[in-house]
Each structure stands twice: as structure tokens, then as C-alpha cells.
Image (cartoon, rainbow, N blue to C red):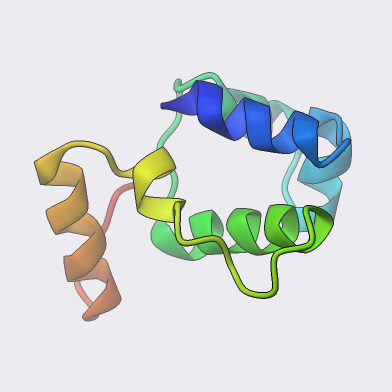
Length: 90
């Protein structure tokens, strides 16, 4: 799962530090996300997807947000709940 995030970041030509700066978080925090030690809420996942999508020349935020960040059924349910105003993954 997180390997895909790493692959997209590298394809975009960004280091972890550069991407962290672009999305407004610390590089240690981003490192924890990319290495699967920390969860991420849907709003931050969408920001990451948007930045990577822009760097990779995709016209809109990548549709792969859930594929990367929310792979289990439970996590997908939490993401959908959060979009509707409930609590999400974090």
C-alpha cells in the first residue's frame, strides 16, 4: 500500500522532505505516513494526491487516494463516514 505512495512521490521527482514541505507537514510526519506507521485523514490524503497529481501532470486529484490510504473495508467505511461529517482514520 505505502509502496505505491513512495512510487508516485519518486515518479514526481520529489524527496520526502520536499513533498512534506509542499503539503504543509513535517518531514518526520510524512515519513511515518509513507512507511505505514501513521494513519492519515482523508483531507490530508487528498492534499497529497493533489500535489502528486499536479507534479505528474494529472488534471485533477488522483482517483487512487482510497487505494493508497484506505485499502481495508473498515478503513474505506471510515473514509466514507468522514466525508459525511463523522470521524475518520487518523
